[in-house]
Length: 148
Length: 148
DNA sequence: GTAGTTGCAAAGTGTTTGCAGGCAG
DNA sequence: CTGCCTGCAAACACTTTGCAACTAC
Image 1 (cartoon, each protein chain N blue to C red):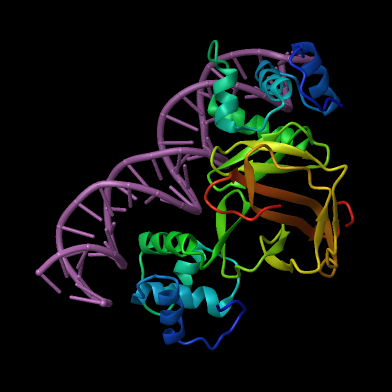
Image 2 (image 1 turned 30 degrees about the vertical axis):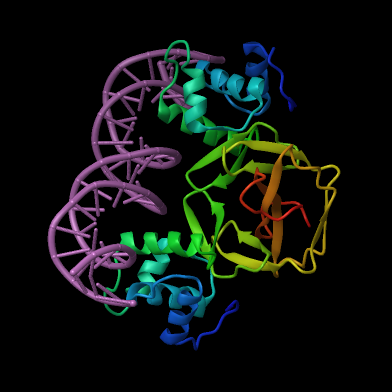
């Protein structure tokens, strides 16, 4: 499974990746996957559409949203919810957390390997943890905030 | 500072609380504060408006949003961003984290006291941590998820 | 060929804004 | 009185949906 940034991904690689996940590789899906996986950044639907349509118009808004939802279901990407106004999509499906720059809206990965949470209470009856997301909201060091 | 659920809060208590935070206590603001602090749940703007207007219509949508934004600025409440479709407002301003029931949308507090995070990498240059939010997404124990 | 995919535009949410009238101090 | 609040409705941004035309296999 492809995980980390790789600007040299070919369309064929993408088609393969999609097929591996049970997704019919169409032109639009390949372009969207390519955008996500070659940049390997956290992009919003808007940014993805803009990026895909940079040269010539290749997809519509509806297709971008449909495709992202599909990728999500198939476990190809994850969504990151930090900004009330939009969802970010994350091509990194390995367990990890995020720094969120409140001023710029920039999102950065934190490797989960080194991190550990202790003292988490028991889950409520009959519940299972789906995921644990840690978001460290950061900002430039003026206007007071607590130090880590 | 008032922190925990208290169904017997009076309007006067609310007026005082608002004044303590430098907020002019108007009828609408008192009702909104009362709803938040007496229930001490995580409510969305919609739910707050519905709750406040239960008996007779007392506030408009605009006023609810304005007031919540004001409370936020003044540090009376916090916002919790877990659901891409809406923001929740949290009257508990003490450091704490959340369980988020993905099926029901229900949000539950986790006391921060007992918890500890280790291995958090250094913040990027010139950055200060604003807050650290941990969201444990949970669901009823069918349809596999990882155990905590 | 046929099921599945796409694009458009229109509808749907939650949230924000502009402005006239109203209320607190 | 005077400035801040309120309410309405219209504007907004993001996301979803319905449906006819199209494309991968």
